Length: 172
Image (cartoon, rainbow, N blue to C red):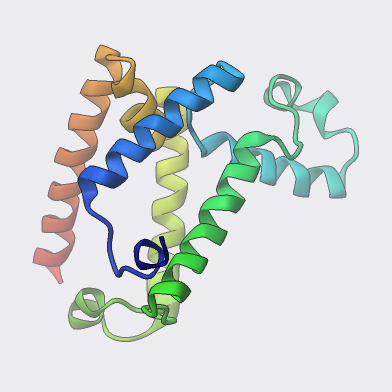
């Protein structure tokens, strides 16, 4: 067991299978699909609620999705904690503010990297709201349920991701 916990990387086949089993258990226990994008919106709502206690009355979205800590929020916290523990146990943990490929094209300034990541995250979140689901919601839960819309979304994710990387790294 300890050998598994200290490996640098697990087989993607084993990992994918375990994510599938987790998704089955999630459906069995809560009748909900795995997804995390609503957790970010709920976090924004929690921050807004600290500034204005009537935010749920003023915002229709928050009436539907209450700004609170729910199972998705705890899933995100678990993902962060699990990734940290995994990297520490395997001995590969490092604070790498600027990945090598990014540094080769744009320099080693963390601020530019963080700004690009922040803008990318905003675009992803807006896209997730428009599409009615995030990459994990469509990519894991939607494809698991054989939803045609999710398969189309996942194909678009890959095509757009490859094109965007080629355009960004080709221009700079």
